[in-house]
Picture (tube, rainbow, N blue to C red):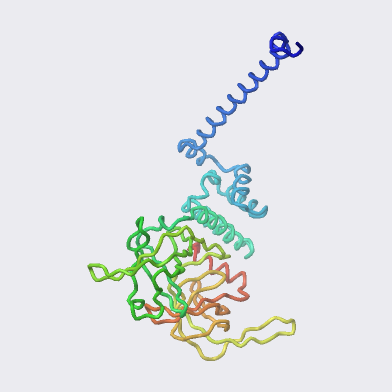
Length: 357
């Protein structure tokens, strides 16, 4: 009978195929073992520390550029910075905030002393922020069980008031928040049982989040404190839309209303009105600020701000994007987006905010 098993066993070609297949499988297995060994070695603390101490090479720059999505221009700038200062391996050190800040500060001061133009100086800040933003975003938490006790959570109520909760306890039942006095039983802003609410908070790495949770119950604690228990949530939304870094400050300023006068080219000239009012800027970036004032100014209006930067008064024009009432202080909180800020002013502002002067 043709094709019988014994015929196949007597065919040398079949034996040869089986031998080659066994050798191939053996080689693949050995290569897999080598790969796993190298992979394990490259993840060891000893290997990583040894790599950190090596000088940065162009290969390291290319690897990092791909990982954190740098543009070609940003990658070239990072290579120049590392080469100028013989920096240790940036691919293994870019998450080290102290190292990174020292490296960029040193390069900024060198560039400023050699009279580089404002664009070159500004690009150093933008690259620093790009890396910082990537690192912060990569450390995002995804579940409310990871929010540490003591975190301040802001509740922007529908009325426009903003209330501050403090996380007292985080356990398997949910989040226990201290209730501000202004939001106790008589307040119309108090969320009802089982209602959803949105809370905003910032962690130590400066990453901002919004969390959507549901109210379980309000509690009267033995020490007289009012607390609210809210559910845990997997709906944690990192707030990554900011195009520039915001810095917490506390700086007096003055401001005026603005008249927008159209120019022949279609652009607007913003002319400040005579009356001046006092305010306090509590956070600031190259793109905008948050200001406290006693005046209830409506959103969408333009505002002319005078504030000291690097010891000299700078003039900034902005549009009020949102107005809220801060319950704790009774002041109005204005969220302002700047308009037409010059590159020179941006560099001055960032120099002071990063403390690179």
